[in-house]
Length: 256
Image (cartoon, rainbow, N blue to C red; front, side, top):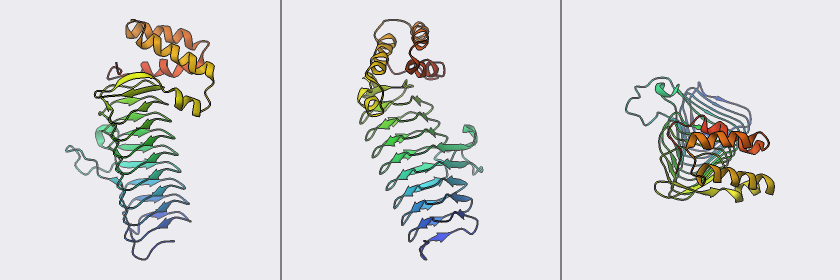
């Protein structure tokens, strides 16, 4: 299961069933879960933990030092969940001391070719980062988020669950959940209705979310007033509650 041309540190811990291709380098303080497949010419450095049944394709770089001039070699780490797929030339960096020392990746995510996750990011579950999409440092991405090709998210931004970032979108502010955004800088274009249908949201739920979008973006209310009105709607429409919770955590304003 381990190609004889692979170079694996004696302190790396590989669970039963892990496969490693030729010319791959796995450094010290790396832990890899059962059933994970590592292709040829991959570099994985630690401290890094990778969960079960992941797939890492050729030339990916996982868990290397953060691209931050303030980083001075501190022992930061990367934590990767289960069933993630990292395609060719994707790069996932460890955290920094300023970001609590860790980059976290959830479960069931797809990182396409040349996707980049910078230091201290938090990526949820079932996300897709298409080719050349990038996250700057300290970005938080909720579950079921899709970044189309070349989409980029500015440092410290948050992107809510079920959002869709269009191709070449330049996100410089927080993106509330359920939104479809595009442009440079990114602007809201409505609710990600197609994505919600695919995830079995009912027509009634989608209609409620469209109404919540109108409250937030079309009513002319100030942000605090809109948030209060959304909180009222959430009493009987639980699908609106993620809007309310997200707005309470906004740090960079929201896309407008």
